[in-house]
Image (cartoon, rainbow, N blue to C red):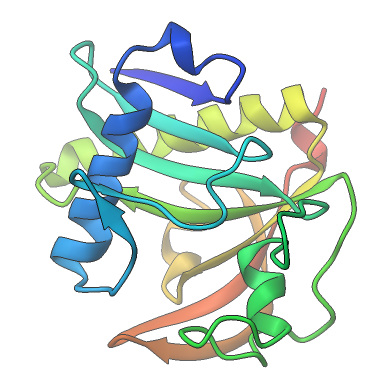
Length: 196
């Protein structure tokens, strides 16, 4: 099992891995969750997959993706869009309620957004925990490389159950919401203790 953080600067060094992340996202979000999202050539993508983002993947040696997330700085801008949680708060996204956060969405260099997080659905239970820990470990590495002190994420509301197991300091950033039959909540993830 390997883990990699991709950026537009290093995509060329990792063969099909970026396309495989988008294929795994399609399987997770479009096929399994039945979300209506953009797709082409068997890959899911959206307006936030820009050179400003990073993609963290846990994968095997053949490039099969076991888990992944997208990281986007809260200072990102692309046309009318910034980052998903802020754009939802601004009323630009119909699929996410605009009152998802207790406070205004942040815009600072030390805060990044985590989106499109998934673990492959067909992993055995014993392996899922190891994959999740490997994903968090790679996110911590990315946070050190990028100077990220905290992240904001929209997670399934059961985040309390696995936050401690992953050794993450997490706090609610917004209310519980049901979207597509799944309960979600915006959450702060504190990475400041891991920067050194």
